Every structure is written in C-alpha cells, then in structure tokens.
Image (cartoon, rainbow, N blue to C red; front, top):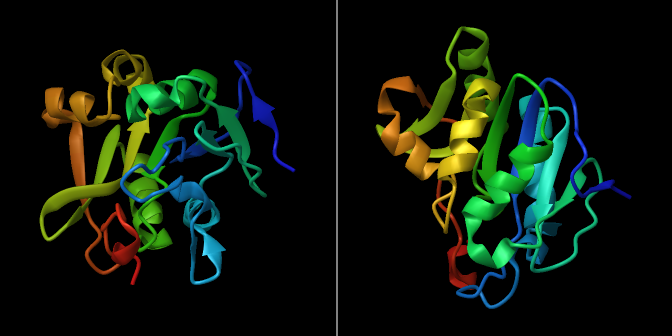
Length: 192
C-alpha cells in the first residue's frame, strides 16, 4: 500500500512524477486504471520511472482513487482544473535535485529515455526534454531550482508547457528516438 500525501514532503534524489489524476473523458474512464497488455497504465508509468533511475516516485491521483505499489500517491483535489494542478500538487511535496515528469497515458516510452534525462542532469542540464525525430516529447526533467517558476505557470491543461515555452534557452534536448515512442493514448483504439 502506498503512502498518501496531503501536504507533507517526500525526499530523495531524482523524483519521478506520474501525472495520473485526470478523468480520461475522451477515453471514457480514468486512464490510470486502464489495463494494457495486462498491466495498468499507472503501474507501467511507475515501472518506467523506477527502471529509469528515479526514486522516490510520486503518482498524482484525483478523478479515481489509486493504490500503487512502489509509489507515494499524492491526492490532487483540484484535478478537474487540468494537468497544471497535478504538476503543482506533485512539486509542492517533492524534494530532491530534480524531477522527471511523465503523463500516465504514454505507455510506449522506455526507461532509457529517463536514464538519458538523468544523465543530462548529472552533466549540468537543469531542464532536459526527450526528443523524437527532433520534436520535444516526454518525459521531461526539471531541476528543483525551477520548480517555483513551473508551479507558478502550471495552469489549466498545459502542465509544464508554459514554463518550457517561456524558457527555451534552458532546455537541453535529449534524443530518445531509439528508446520507445512518445505517443499518448487519448482513445481506446490508440492502445495497439
């Protein structure tokens, strides 16, 4: 059984954050609970971050209550405000040098992408973004020094996107073409 956090602090090195609070309206149910190849999407995302080197791992829940082995569940009562509220909720309790953020609906990502972002961070990057075919995708790593600015700009359904758009000069692109696919799954037929 995971710990549920309502305003405490979770410590560690590079924190993994799974954004899993949404209702999955286009999908028809919360995507965190959807099973793909016998594993819930939320459990796949936790494994991705764990296998990539993150510890601890936070899962932001909202629309559906979650119990997730190997992760601390962070309750986001404002989940219906959009992904920005989940980013704020997670960063409010995270502690460490950096955080790797991943949406729950990206089951085709591979842990090597997470490892590469952490390596870029260890080499001095404060914002590292996985790229596929030269385009930015997921996951995203953000050093703790930027968390206040990310929390300030994380509104609506944009997550950390507004921060990234305003601070392109900070971004270290990390090619991850050979690590998996960045596709998200918005509808059941996207799970193939």
